[in-house]
Image (cartoon, rainbow, N blue to C red; front, side, top):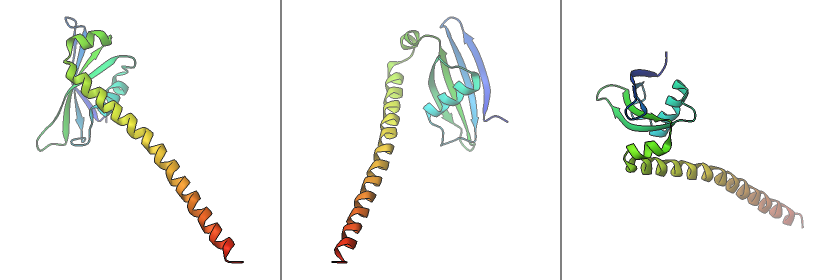
Amino acid sequence: MSIIETVTDVDNTFLSRRELTCNFAGLAGKLRKLEAIDMITKEFNLDGKVIIPIRLKTHVGKPTVTGTFYVYEDEGLAKKHVNPTIFSRLDKTKAKQAEEAQEVPAEETTTTESSDKAVSSEEKKQEEKPE
């Protein structure tokens, strides 16, 4: 059983886009837009296409999220049709995730360096005792 259930899948030829509405079972309060984009890309094999999450709605009393996505072939066409605020929010979220990804390795190196310093200071203390 898949977590993603397709509610509607419309090919809007007038606006040259595919409009998907899907239910995500059991992900209420846990699903983020970029995670939803990844899940939709894998489920419908949409590699290389521009997917824009328009709306993620959590239902009251149910652990279900309904998401509306627009799938475009061309990013320029998507930027003409969709509100630029949506793109700025997506870019901001992507930048934040990239920044967090860079901080994780930096923290790991910091902890190893501090542990090396701690070991070296302990070694110095042990070296001083025999004298």
